Image (cartoon, rainbow, N blue to C red; front, side, top):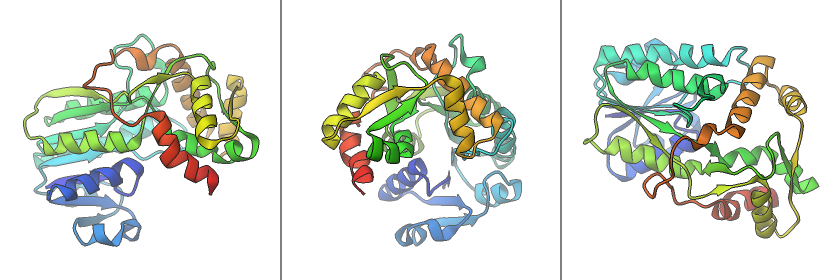
Amino acid sequence: MIVITAPTGQIGRRVVNRLLAAGTPVRVIVRDPARLPAEVRERVEVVEGSHGDRDVLDKALAGADSLFWLVPPNPRAEDVHAYFTGFSAPACEAVADHGVRRVVNVSALGRGTPVAGEAGHVTASLAVDDLFAGSGADFRALALPTFMENLLRQVEPIRSGGEFVSCSPGDRKARLCATRDIGDVAADLLLDGAWSGVGEVPVLGPEDLTQDEMAQIMSEVLERPVRHRRVPVEEYRAGLVRAGMTEGASRSMVEMFLAKDAGLDHGVERTPRNSTPTTFRRWCEEELKPAVSG
């Protein structure tokens, strides 16, 4: 039995579908079962509730072999590090108590780089990895760069103003991956019974692109001019607060972006094995263009 958290999210949804296609027994933890597609609800065991709740975890992990873990975003958290570790600590205890053999966690690139300790959300993710690494289960952290899907938060300014913004230089090479590829890597790990021990699995996407190169690709796919506009760090952070983030969460987010500019995501060498298939152009064609056109 494989237990999946956040099964209605972009990554978890992909993991569930891949496991069901392989004929594997799946149990999901979900706050609102109605958000699951009907065809999924019919084929999985459902445990209703939050996966940060120890009682819910005890129900879900009874007799389970593996766990897919994802800390849900919380823009209202004042202390992101405390939120990530506090949310995950009950799961680490439950994994040990129930003898769960394997855990796969959605984490981040950056371990071992000089800026890993001051990287906001990434530093918090790495701390969660450390908790699970001490649980006694075999463990793999999915070491991830920036998600392509983050651009969907800027659909309106792309549509109406032909621009997207960040606090990063336009000519800095960045690593990007699509959530579909993350889900596929996670599912493959959960289906593979051969690995053991503690480690990380980088998921780097197929290419490194600058913000300006991304703008050019977006322009070509959308058939309209799109430009990248760099904004000062404090202006960017203030925009996050206006959008509903706490001061603490916005600072943590900006710390992560600044650490990425300082090389956080480039501590791992790209290889064919850790390069996933979905290009930014393909993602724009299949995901961004329909969103902007709609």
